[in-house]
Length: 103
Image 1 (cartoon, rainbow, N blue to C red):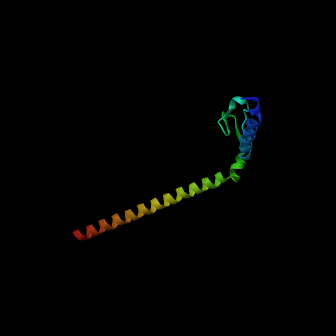
Image 2: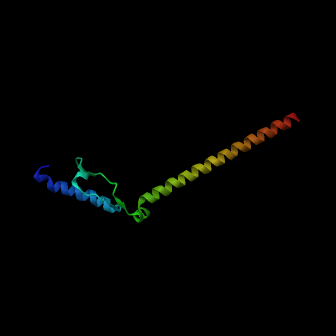
Image 3: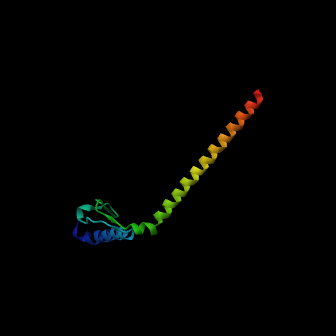
């Protein structure tokens, strides 16, 4: 990295660490080896020691996404249960009709 590129590198570092902070993440192992310049941004690696503020998750859009996915799963299960019940009823009625036909 050339000396004149320091300001741009600093801007990208501030951007990535501001983003991490906004999500309640503290990197925990900040050193240059863990900051990779990938063109227009910095990619932070080695997040094993990262500290994540769990209360931030409760206020984030991710909780809404998780709730939405859970609701979809529950609706799918309900639909599958209703379809299975309809099929069981149809088979039962078919068996009863067949039994009446033999009598």
